[in-house]
Length: 556
Picture 1 (spheres, rainbow, N blue to C red):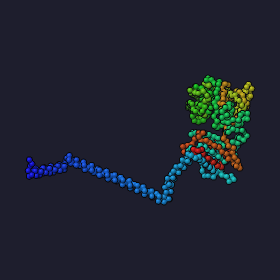
Picture 2: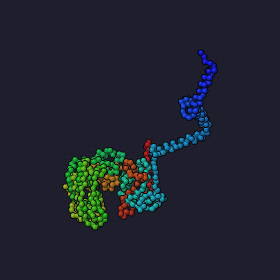
Picture 3: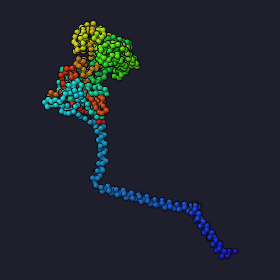
Picture 4: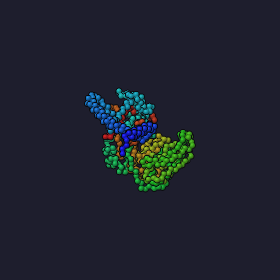
């Protein structure tokens, strides 16, 4: 049965009013706090907003890409239409820095360079030479301005580029030399004051008359013509050289047994000793106090390569005035162990005193120069001293005394034949030629300096040659050079230019271990011994010095 119409309408109105009231309540709650329906509605709104933004972003990216393409197109069109000089300028702006870098690399590393310096001594206001007191004021001769060297050692400096290897020094000077005088040029080769010397001018060297292989000139025609390698295989030869390293000898009759050198020696001495394992040297000294100051004696042992092995010293005797009072005896023992068998160099420094006794545990001890001092002038007893040698060639000995007390008769016993030699010249060198063979030489009064291009021993069995080749300096005096069999030299024959001479020599900075300061300076020195002699009236006119410093590159 159906409801009446008026009831249905009334019922619908009631439901509508209930829904409307509920809707108003929900609206009111949504304003005061979160409501699930409200949240759901808000979430839908957010989602719709995100979707709208994404669509907008996609559109924006597309628009930006289109704009970028338009800009790139504009740039290309501008590049095509830009003036040529602007393009060139931009190219040069990049190229020039690159070229500068390449030039610096090339100049400093790739390409060889020569740095040339000319020191015009007479014309320039520069004072290239020092010390000033060993150089004259400028002078002139036929339009040539020059300065005179007046002292034995005169120095000058040369700038050296980093990485430079060779230095050539050329000098124009006059041959104002006494007989047998020479001029050497030295380059500093140690931080302390030490120089490597080479002959700049030596009128005694006539290379044109000798055969040679490379740098090796044969002076003795009885020997083979060899190069530097060949020299290493020769025995008993004497070589004049500044850079040849001799081969050490093997001594078969060496004994580790003590010998006593019971002769008095004056001042500095150098001994060559053959030793193995252990070496013990007892030194006794007495100061003679002839000069003011303390008199320490330094004792140094070096191996054959010049490396210091051991050293010690004996202090002053307490007397520092020039009273000439003979001091007390003082002793010390130098000990070295772990030595390889071979030759060692023992040096006793120069001092105002006497070495009165030496004890060494080796039967092989020699020296090249000996100052015998068993003489009353030193407060000692005058007694005989003996030296021994066994030479395989003729040599010249040099003998010198500085006092009349040293004038004496010297006995040369050559295989039983005794020759008396009257040594009667004071304060000047006397030369004595001796033939090859075995000698015992007796000095009756001593106070004499005796030198040899070979060696002396202090006992009959003590003589030996430390090295297979004896090396002497190219700048050695004539009496030493007389015994030379070979000459190794880079000596360039000087050229004549009127009254002037032009001479040159070369130095290898690396191979010769030359000392260049942190500021890039290499010191050179002229060595003219005759100018240093007392009363010398000689001078050497020098016009100019020319220097070429070579710096190699990567490609030579």
